[in-house]
Image 1 (cartoon, protein in one colour):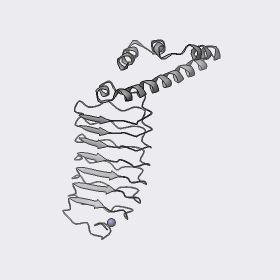
Image 2: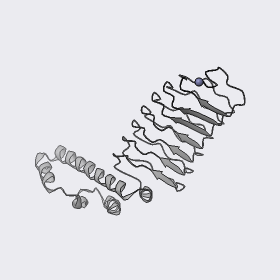
Image 3: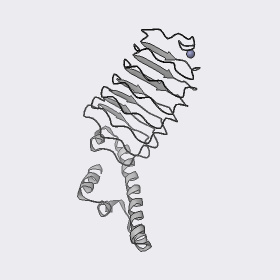
Image 4: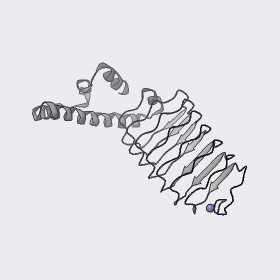
Length: 221
Ligand SMILES: [Zn+2]
């Protein structure tokens, strides 16, 4: 049983850990620095977060679908293992730590703040890309993001060669589909058949839109 279940939210409270019985949170004190909602199977939403908050840990909250607007004071956010969470709101510029691993409903990450040092978005199966990484980033984990198609140029140094290969082959598949769609819509079935017969990864240059893309693609290989 936590402070909420006991009906006591003390003025001046800095740390609050919510227990598994909590369904909704009351208005939070303006002194709160850290809020932990870890393994909260009944929690569906959050109230407005206080401007004092530095750390928000919501981990394994199976009914959580959204996060509230994040305060400008926030340094660390974890929203990992939240299977219904489908978006992460705009991230404050102060954020240095973001964990959103095993969130199978997240399709996009928001713009990453310039202060971010650590990002773990592994096992997010709907992620097809992620935004430009800030120069400040020290560690990136995007392992088992099996559907990544594009990654920003500066992400490559953080990624294993196996992961790059996966992205590379996803890109080829995606590209082929785009090309096939384009040809079948404009020139008909003859071209589609031709592409199917002549397709090979080493011929990627033939399928790239422009020289920039060829350069980018070659740098991956
Ligand atoms: Zn409680």
